[in-house]
Image (cartoon, rainbow, N blue to C red; front, side, top):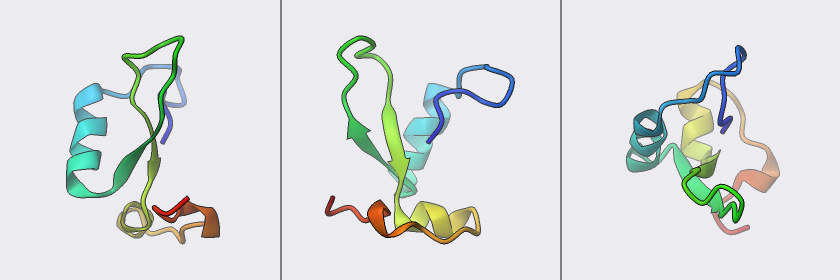
Length: 62
């Protein structure tokens, strides 16, 4: 998931948390430089929600 939109504005933390709660995104990694950032990736369900096919590497077992 992008941290910023196409204009460089940060994606709302609440939006990211809502996506995690809905099962559309999952925490991917921790950023030691910016520990308050939620670095996430779409789950297969998230790709379904946006009408896109998940790449093979998008499974939760990576």
